[in-house]
Length: 190
Image (cartoon, helix red, strand yellow):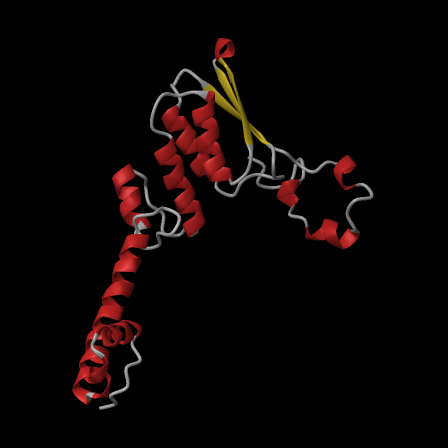
């Protein structure tokens, strides 16, 4: 067996021993063997810890979804699932424009303006910092429907590219590369 200590924690263990143990083969073997086990334990515990944070969770998203009563969809990208979870966490409490804004921005990943028109029983969610329809709009609608009172209706206003936005600003190649959903009347428009 090789008696070289290559394990990071094994090296730390060896450095904590009196210096004369560095020349003892058995000490190096013990530090390497224990170090490998402790390296593995440290890695596993860091992996488990990362699952307790929405932004770093992967396989732990299932637990978050279960705890928050979210219908899990393993086919959705991780970032969309995280957005649903963040939104649900933010969505607890009294319904106000700021709460709706916070929930919507968690899904959208950009700036949102929210207008609450109480006399018209209406909430308008306006997406302002990106063009087109968010890819997880159905999830956003479901989350907002859960936090607003049933007597209110929600309208969504999207920002699209208009002729004035692209005239003399985009080359033909850039225009062809722009998704159709970014234009008024394009496909997938809410």
